[in-house]
Image 1: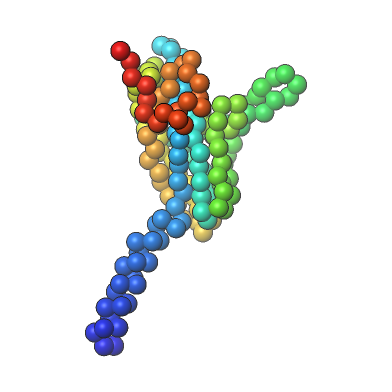
Image 2: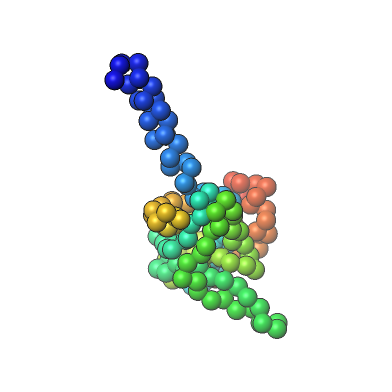
Length: 162
Ligand SMILES: [Cu+2]
């Protein structure tokens, strides 16, 4: 192979390596966690998860909770129920929105009360369509107990207290 071919190969290879993780990646946006009062054992985390190639969320963990799981909300009559999902399917090229009143990440066994300016670290593990595992570290701001959940989308920074 002549040197100029080698150079082209090298450049193509470098471009492929640079692109590969971005093409297959799962991305998370708009993550937030509902604040709690002292002694409250559990809360929920919300976010939008997007996958280009299709993926399943198979595990969640956080240093602030002893147990994290994916919950599905459903109503029968006037009664709202939550049940644990084994995994959460993200369709190829699509997004799944975790929101209040719908699917959410349940954080149980909280180590302390979560206040308005706190950030919560969440580790999300996905299995992509091809079987590859991907781990995402998400930092989610805590929204105070009474604050509307949708507010976070317009004001990304956690509210400051005087
Ligand atoms: Cu729940």
